[in-house]
Length: 179
Image (cartoon, rainbow, N blue to C red):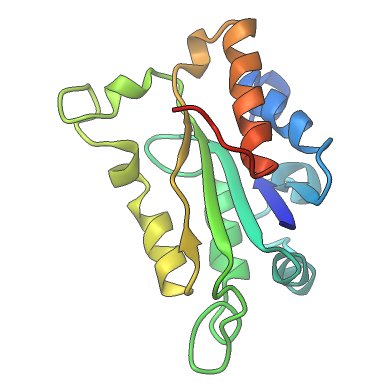
């Protein structure tokens, strides 16, 4: 399965979890990786729309990899969706180039995943918080995969990160993962 990883992280140089995941993704056959801030900086209007659309068209699965920032995607990923998923290309009566493609969300949380529950400090699940991404996928006729969640990134030790990377590699290689 041809996969493109669209990663957004405004503080990538200080990242431990997303950096380890992204570096691992680079080593996998049939996976193309794109770090938005490295390519476009922080200019939300700098995207090469046609090039990005061509890259997405060539993929069977699109992965959005990012750290959760104030219960949302980083600004560059939101801008990417706004600029690239255009009417007549991603949706609408004259185009639907994303239909049938998988959308995989890979999100890291600074806090433990337990904080994202009715009983936790966030009072909502990760799926509820990221519902706009599922709605986007549905609207574009995409298949929305189960969210890959990396909780507790701030307190993760090297073994935790290694374990998460191993699971991510299995996901990208379409291998079964343990629950």
